[in-house]
Image (cartoon, rainbow, N blue to C red; front, side):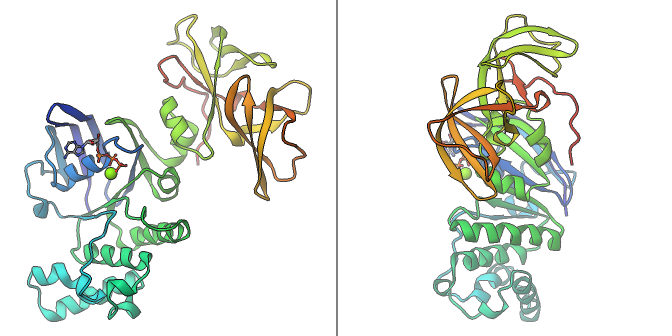
Length: 366
Ligand SMILES: Nc1ncnc2c1ncn2[C@@H]1O[C@H](COP(=O)(O)OP(=O)(O)OP(=O)(O)O)[C@@H](O)[C@H]1O
Ligand SMILES: [Mg+2]
């Protein structure tokens, strides 16, 4: 059980800066996910928390104690990597027991702790197996078991599921969430998969090019992304973006010109905006409807994906390729057809020329 607090963490490898002024307060027992594209600095940040890498500047506190200079072992942290190195010649029991044998614990204590970890991870009937006789998911659970027995204050996971196939990843996601509930411990989990982030996290940290973009609950990030980057990263299929000229602004919002819809007032806070600034609107696929009238964004349909309960319609809107609309499963629509899409203005996100989101009217968030 522990809080983790990062204060202005900067990291340079030689002259290349890879983390910029990252500050973050993680609460006790929280499940926090670091998400961002490949190379954005997730692993580096995790390794700095673990003490495997030293920050160039900044401070780390675990449970209120400054640990920036502390040895990894003194930090009470356990880290599970993407490539879980199990000892192939040792059975599951001995793999899990390994750190306890190194710590020279008594046999009966080791027995108790290994059995408990095996029960938690549903490995009791596999304790005599060698890693080569296990499935990928079971091997991953053994690696987690080995970190559980060390009874850490904080668990760090670096993409632990990325070697598994899609079905197993789904299962392990649920198991890790259950494990978090059972162990009641602070967990930090790194992934570049936004679905893993959305489904597992209490709060998500979105990182882009070494900078913290946003820190919030999954639904906060979904409903109120503060930047175009977060808006495009969180949500699947991705948000659609369209550059639009803006016509005017007032206390009710901005009026923009939407293709074939014409003037549309969007209820956002436009106080900080420059007149004449180019804007981009962002609309999530699930916020589109087929227009009931002749007015609507015209989409030339290119590809249909019928999923049963819903239909994904891909096409181009006003020269923008790869637009996507999520419509009801039975929607009557054909490839090559031009359909008209409608959207509730309250669901339209607006970004300024720097990619900063303009604040929308309050949306209740679950
Ligand atoms: N030891 C190192 N020496 C020099 N540069 C490094 C070192 N480790 C990481 N980097 C650089 O730091 C940046 C961030 O790397 P990092 O491994 O933290 O990214 P990541 O977000 O974990 O990416 P991925 O999702 O691919 O694992 C990259 O540009 C990488 O090349
Ligand atoms: Mg990484």
